[in-house]
Image 1: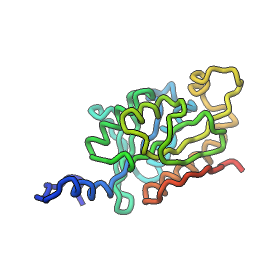
Image 2: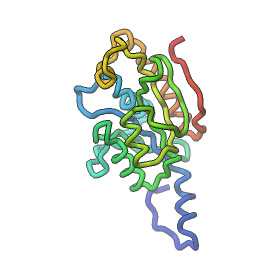
Image 3: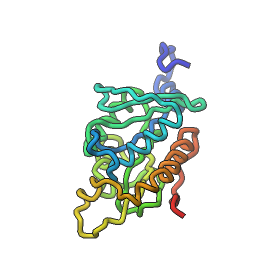
Length: 211
């Protein structure tokens, strides 16, 4: 089925659009663009969505008008859009809102994957809705979308050393020991993203990829 078709004449266009939206969802990875941010903790959202794209044959396109890198593919009977904002982390919501408006996707059908300092490395926490918990990228999403989108929160804590500024810590590269476990982490996030893409409701739970 083509993404865009001539809209039929219907008595209730709002309900007609709602029916169409049930077959589209958006998966967003948060991070900062640029090679200098590769392998930094704050870019785990980019890493996770890139791995999911690679495993499922998505092809990225640079969409300057939508302020993001965008990929689209069918998974089952659902059109899945992958988004990596190019706005830098603190303005992520601008890109996601632009894509959401262009493709007419409801915030309930959006899931974001990102780093979470208050969760230990080795854990991935899932939930729908909630606050930003001090994460500026999520704060921007909430500003533009509301709070109802799904969250895949990848643990990067605790800070080491404890006295380091949080902003400095998240922009550091993963340690050598952490990098040795990134493959396991990305397997876990890909599994969650796949479950979401094929229609499974996002549960409220914590998954451990380090046993």
